[in-house]
Length: 591
Image (tube, rainbow, N blue to C red; front, top):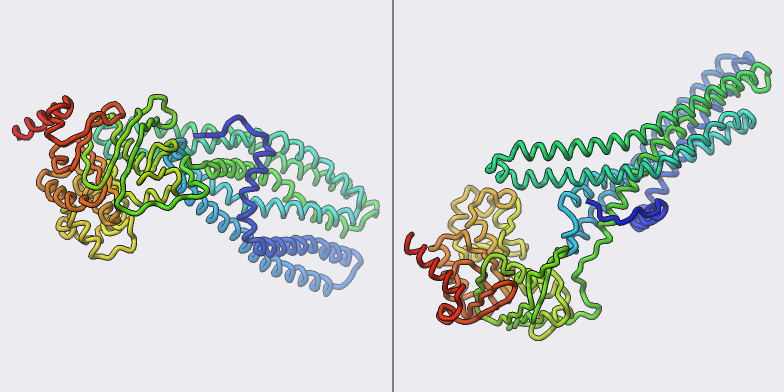
C-alpha cells in the first residue's frame, strides 16, 4: 500500500532520505572514520603490489639473481597479511555500522508507530508496517553497509589506480578509460526506471506480508469455512505478482552488471593491443606492462561495482523513502503547547453534541451525541451499530474531537495532554486483546510493577483466580497469541482484571462480559457495584441483566443518547428497551 502522491523528483527523494540518515550516522562518526581509514590503507596496499611486481619483472629482465625475487615475494606476502588484518577491521567498523544503523532505524520506527493514533494508523495495513521493518529495512542496511563500502572503495580505487596508471603512461591510460563514459551514461539512464520498479516491488511485498499475517491470525476461521484452498490461491496470486515485479526490476538491473563487465573487458583488449605494441617498441618496460595490466585488473572491479552499487543504492533509496513516509506520519491527536494538568477525582465527564465520522467515511457514527457521566455505575444499551463502541473510543481519547466537545470537570480535553487523559481511564474493549505471554504479565500490562498479591486480588474480583490456579503453571501459564488457549469468558475476565488492577477513577467496559456465564456474571457485577461507588463506571452491554444494578441507564440509537432513567422508567416509556427486556426475559424462561 503506497501513500505517496505524484512521483517526486528523484534528487528530492534522495535529499529527504539522506536527511533521515544524517542524525543517525552522526552517532557513529568515529566508527565510520576508522573504517574508511582502514579501507583506504587496504586500497593503497593493493595498489602497491603491482609496483612490487613491476620491479620484480624488470629485475628478471635485467638478469638479476633469484634473491631479488625472494625479497619481492616476501614483500607481497607481507602486504597480503597486512591487507587481511585491515580488511577485518574495516568490515568490523563499516558493516558493524550498518547493523547499528538498522537497529536505530527499527527502534525509531517502533517508537514512532507507538505515538500514532488510530486516525493515522487507518491509512496503513499491518502488513505494510511489517514489510517496512523487515524487507525495506534490510535493503537500507545492505545499502548502508556493503553498498556504501563498495561505492567508496570503487571511487577511491578508480582514482588511485588511474593515477598509478597515468604515472606509467598517460596516453595508454586515456585509451584504457575511453569506454568508461558509456557505463556512466547507461547507469544514469536506467537509475530512474530502476527506482520506480523497486517501488512496485516493495509495495507488492507489503501486500504479500499482509496476506500472510491475515492468514496466520485467522487460520481457525479459514479452516472453519473450508477456505484453505481459496486463501492459498489468493496468496499464490500475490506471490506471482511479487515475482513478476521482481523480474521486471531484474531486467533493468541485469543490464547494468553485464554491461559493466563488457566495458572492463573492452578496456583490457585495448590495453593488450596498444600496451603490447608499446612494450615491443620499448616505449615502456615489460614490468610497466605487467603493472599496467594489474592496475587495469584492479580498475575492473570498480567498473563492475558501479552497476552493483547502483542496484543496492536504488533499492536502499526506495526503501528509505518508504520508511521516511511512515516516520513523517503524525497523529491527529496532538498535545497542546501549554497543557493543563488533569483534575483530581471525583470526576465528571461531559460530551456535548459530538459528531464523529471515521477517516474516509462520510456518514457520521455519532450525531450530536451528548452524555454526562459522574461517580457510580452507568449502563448503556442500544442496537448494533448505534455507536456505543465509537463513544467508548472517543471517551478514551483514541480519536480527536473538536474544542469544547469533551470536558473533564469542565476542562476541555484538548487543553490536556493525551496521556494525562488516558491515565484517568481503564478501558476494556470488546475484543479484550491478550498477548502471547504469561497470565500474570497480561493482567499486569498497565501496571508492570504490580505485586503478586495485587494481581491475585484483581483476578479474584473477576472470578478467575481459581481457574488460573488450576492451570499447569498457574499465573505463569503462557496463553498463546490472542489468548488462543483460553475460552472467550476467560479472555474477557483477564482483560477486566487488567483494567481493575490499574485502579483508575474511570472504568469503561465495552460489552466485556458477553461470554461470561450468568453465575460468574453476578459475582463480577457485585464486585463492580462496590468498585464503581466512587468512580465513573460505564458498562455497555446487550444484556439488560448486567445493567440492573446500575445507578442510571442510557439508551443509544442512531449515534445519539435518546433516553435516560432507571430500569422501571425505561420500561414504561422506551419502546426499544421494553422490547429487548421482554425478549431476553422470554428467552431466560425458556432456558
